[in-house]
Length: 143
Image (cartoon, rainbow, N blue to C red; front, side, top):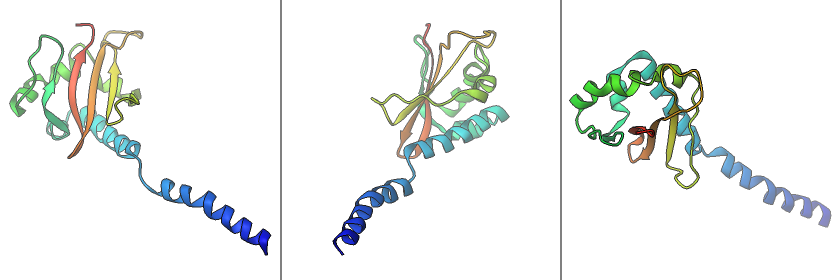
């Protein structure tokens, strides 16, 4: 009887934490879902969909003005996603990079469009907002 009670208590203490923790979706699930939708929209060149997943103002590289309106975003779209960087090609294999100090943000880094490897100076930053994940900045860290 004591052995059975001990086993039952042990199972209660071992399995409920997993049942509780494992059943809840993590931030990574929502991040991965967002990332899939965002990169699909960029790959298709669907500017309105990309803008819908963007939070204004969009931070830009040093010396460049922040993007504050939809019109400015549409005008800068090519610069952000197909200028010196080929976001479509980069996003095919890019994985979100999360800094443990900032768990509500992730980055995607990309190389120059004509680069065969090496440096990845272009940084796309995404942030978890009250509206969900959003694209918030684009920087060339070399500038």
